[in-house]
Image (cartoon, rainbow, N blue to C red):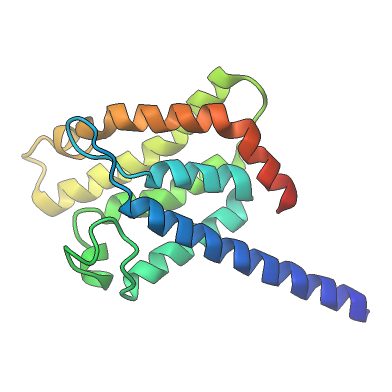
Length: 183
């Protein structure tokens, strides 16, 4: 009985550690700005997909939720922080829909089963990522008004960079799945 309790506690400690490490990597990825046309890209969406693939949907959701919580309470983990504000004020700004989309994307990428078919994997990851942009554009439209071209403002500038990151995740999926075996 004591052994079972000890094993459950050690598994919980391992999951907390992994979620914390994942949230740190996600925060670091938000600060890495790679020059890309027409706007610089961060690596956040790539890391969100990798967390889903590596951790699965449950631990993936816990990790991204922890990351969002860290940002909401004022830690400078989001891409524009601390320069553009911190905490709940920043979170509820123009990027909130995209940040909430991370939850859907990590859930979907964590639920999918991945085989060696790169085309299927590519389309699964496009599907997961599309929710980041869908929720982002919905929030942006509500925030700045629907009379603007929300697609041109909220998605189009990022599509080429996003395609590049999805390709990286697609080709790295077999390596990422090796992490899942450790989780």
